[in-house]
Image: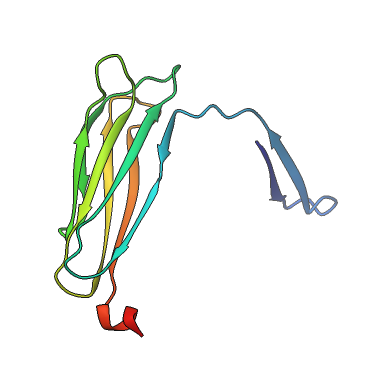
Length: 133
């Protein structure tokens, strides 16, 4: 990682200067994908899977899953299989009409370095007539 920060001072001889910070960043968890985009036509069931992979040096358990909005997006948390570290979220959506839905899934963990994880989900149902033209 390499970040440059502009520092402003009240020193008349040195009103501003850049401070560069360089360092290695260790990933605590990988979320694939971190944003889910579903699309289809009314009457079609849409589904996707999100995988949460904790880094070997930073184990974590997901203790709770909360959806922010009450929409046509439903999420199911799947615990790791025996001997594996990967958590999964099965995401499903259904609508009988052209519409779009949005939700934020928040996962609470037992790891103090990453107590919350977020996954954004979009589901868009296009009007069949608009797709035919």
